[in-house]
Length: 296
Image (cartoon, rainbow, N blue to C red; front, side):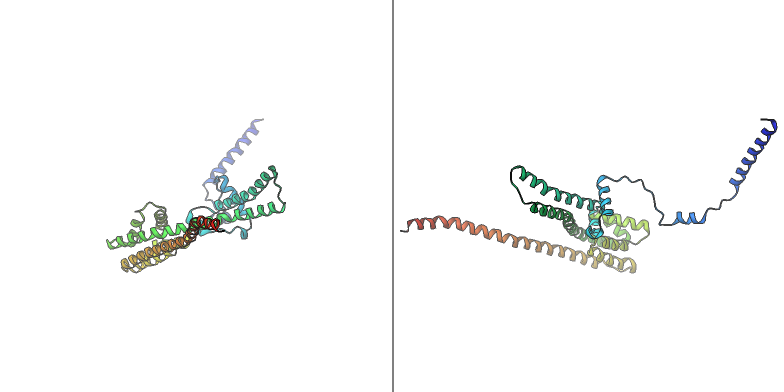
């Protein structure tokens, strides 16, 4: 290259560098459409969450199975603190076990020489799969009922603590926070987490408890939230109302326990009667046999 060419190249590089410096100093005007997309709440967020095999199977089941045949009890699952993916994965696993067990049993019978009609194993396999698919629903429903009963028992204690804090002169929010911080059971933990979220979100405690009652389908908690709202919003003294509500909760729990005990007694009456009849038969049978033998 000649000296002129070197000079032209050096001038071009110098001009390009100067242009880049000037452009970096000028104010930037972002693209309006791209900015609105970035600020939109519907912008998809890419996550790198690693799912376990159980959760992955459940999410695949939620996407693949029609919604009509896989209803999800959202309130029961929220109360039990399990995810819908876990629930669907459990249903699919139980259904698979229900499908496989009759086939394994019929194969074992064939190996020992017992031949069954082909219709019988098919019907049993279908019935086993359906029962296995429905079994988690009954399990979750039963566990949720027990959890709601436990929630009501603990809620009576929580309401008494709130009434005591209010009687000592504490404010409504302070009374709720102090009462929720006393226990370490899962009910107190749930209430404490709810109140903490409400504090950070700027929501009143009673409104948060009302939302939690709807989420978990606990009507007693909604009643307590309404009572506390009277104290927080209107400044009314509700200590007597809170104590009356706690007493009502305990009486309802006691009535439910008595009803359950009566049901157990009624169920036990039939086995006891059968045992009595069998015992009498054992006592009477030898005498009847002796009389029958002695007769000419």
